[in-house]
Image: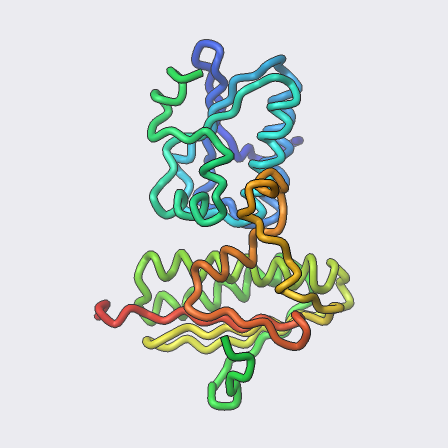
Length: 118
Length: 146
């Protein structure tokens, strides 16, 4: 990643890697591609990873961001890992609901609930 | 939805940009500043921001195929009544009706193809013209907002 600033804050809680987005908007191709790369790098470090994506700070996201999440979900599944999502605001949840991705992803109200469910 | 909106009846501001996402960002900022000035509420602003992102990304990436020699024309008119945006690319066009339903259970794990669905969900009107090279969309402002 060089000197590029990270889009993610990563903390380890037991076996769960909790990832918080630092960007308020996950809209544009450049940043989405960088986020995808950061998340893919995270997967390479672990076998059967348990990853929680926390959307606490996220106010906007686009269909390209949804695509990145779907790709990540697939990659996590390929290495027998689990991906969960939490703290999605009602506005953002509506984007998941319209696209029916709330049926594809395992979504929790809070990070604590998600961590306990792994 | 009718495809024969009378654009001549609208006093548009016009921007022509290269197929470049950075240039697109400047146009988005200009339109969103008008949205702010016209006091659209938070949900309406969220919707317009999303639709602009989807329309411009589609025009640059899919319409013009990222070809920097091709342009994207953006016409917009924002008033306290509504925001009207027309985005035109110089690509081959496409048939919106042939785009598969991204909400079909069998397609949920396909990472692309949700932009049109989101635009249709969030805008009051979305209309494709010129064989899909142009998208016209409208978001009306809630009149309960002063």
